[in-house]
Structures are given as structure tokens and as C-alpha cells.
Image (cartoon, rainbow, N blue to C red; front, side):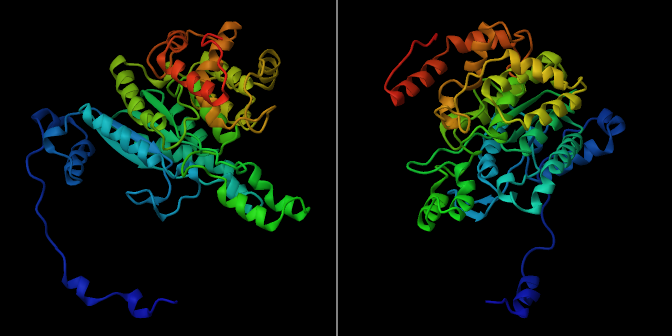
Length: 423
């Protein structure tokens, strides 16, 4: 039904109701003569804005951190949609933002949340919307970088993103913020649905129906059932999942963080431990410039090859290197790495069996693949990672960790067979 003109123009009652003056926040700003005389006026105005939004004046002395994400849509407290996002990849990451922010608050820090939502390549396929896909990456990276720089008092940045262009944009933004410590939180993957096609297969339903390969009822049912959970990137190793793998391989994301099942405990924990990692990097004085190095880029190329990842990362990895002030890899570099590196991962859509990405995570994900690459003498283990320690130290921990054993045991139970943890 068409809304009436009266509904659109509004009522007199609401103008008569409500306040037109309010009480200011209680307390006083922690000002000093030096601050008043020497600090930029923006720093002082920022303190006023902080208490104006409800932050306690007594807690204004903490370190300040930016949490920038590609969150999209509007969820109710119970997760029901009030306004949809463009895709599952950004639908739940507000939960990671909250987890990270609460962790930072608990450590006496002041978190700020900024947003630059992202489109969905799957949604725009076959439309002119695809012309905006790659340009969006560059635009979003610029916006995020400006958002980070627009908090001059920030001591570090946390970037939370999931999908094809949003996560590369986030990595570009952090790479260009070289003087600050920073951590990327991959947004995880959607669970596979029982008895259903995956989010890659269903994208061919129209073509298959046109060729009488599936029925109308089959297409309608499979199209409805493809997502086994409400959040996360697609279940196959496409650009979104590969970008998560590369974020971890670069050292930007914590070990065993890429491809976590969205909404599950192992995923939600990423918000907390990534926030702790950011505080740790800040305390150790390790900026992003010390993590994004030529060795880190070389490692990312190796891991990309070992995963058999999306070739779109041949665009994104050089862009990240350039944003970090490094020499981007050349075509010859890619040829050399791809010829020297065995493919170790069996995931959708490459096969041969085609495991969904959550199974890759449960099998050990990026650190498990890196262990094999280290045994082959291919990795540079001297590089620093988001843990604040070297890659070698991180892999030493992973090799004998309870986390690895727990993940391996769960995979073995599912497969009904086990292999030694050290294999």
C-alpha cells in the first residue's frame, strides 16, 4: 500500500514532545596546563566528543585503537534481520567488532569503531554492478586509510573483513598505515548445509536449468538451502577464502584464524585474541612496517600456491606490497614460486575430493600448510607475525599445541580414521 502524504509529512505531536536541552556529562576532562597550551585543538575536542557519547571522563587516559570493519546489514539482538546486508560475509562480523572492543575496554583501552561496508561479487555477476567490483577495492582502501588517519590519537588498528574485495581493501589500508601496529581479523566461512549444494555450485543453477540439467523444484530447493550458517564467506576456496589465507600467511592475522566457521566459538574467539595481539604489538613497539616485509610477501606467495588459491590474489598481493612500500612481485616471481611449490590443499572447487573451507580450517589451516612448507625449506621463518614473535616460533608452538591436537582429533572423528599429529 502506498504511504499517505500525511504519514510522509509528519505530525505535530512529535514536535511538541521531547527535549530541547539536556544535562551535560558529569565529571571533568583530565586536562593539564600543558595539554591546553600545546595539544592540537582537535585532541581536546575529541575528549569532549568521547564523554558526549557516554565514555566516562575518568577513563579517558587509555590507549586508543581503531576497529575498522566491512560490517553490513542491521541485525536484531537475536540475529534476525532488520535490514539485510549484501552478503553473509559481512552479516555477522559486528559480533567480532563487539568482542574486540569489549576486550580492549577490559584492558583499559579506548576502542573506536568505523565502518566501510562491501558489495558482493556473487550478487553482481551477470550485471553491470561487476564494473564496480575492483574499483571498490581501491576506493574502500582509501576510505579505510582516511578513517584510520582521522583518529590522530590512535595507537593501533584492527581490521575485520571477509570477502572478495573488502578483505583485500582492508589489507591495503593497513599496509599503508605502516607506522602503527595492526592486526587483520578474517571474517570466516559459511558452514556447508547438509544435503545441499555449496554457494559456488548454486551460481550455475540458471545455466543448468536452461540446459535441462536440473528441474525447477530442484533449483528452488538448492538455492534456498546453500548456506548452513548466516555469516561467513562462501564455502569454497575462492577469492574471499584465499584472501583470508593470504592475510594469515603475510603475518597480518593470527595463526589458525583464516577460514574459521562464522558464528562458532573458534570464530568468536578471534575478536578477543586479535584485540589482545594488537595491545601486545603496541606494547612491544612493533608497527606494521616490521611485519609486512619482502619475506612476508614471499611467504604469502608460497602459501597461496600450496593452497591452490584464487588467481585474483595475483592482483591483490602486489597491491598490498605496493601499499606497504615494497617492490611488488613480478610475473617471473609468480612463475618461479608456482613451479617450486607443491599444492597441498584439497578444497572446493579444485578437488580432487573438494572439501569445504571449514574442513580446511579444522585440518589445521594455514599453520598446518606452513609446517609442510617449512619442512621443504621454502619458508622464511625469520619474519615477524601478528603474535609479535617470529614465524618459526609460531610454527614451533603450533606443531606441539593442544589446539592442533584438538582440531586434528575432530577431523579424525569425522573421517573415522586418524593419523599421527606429527604427520
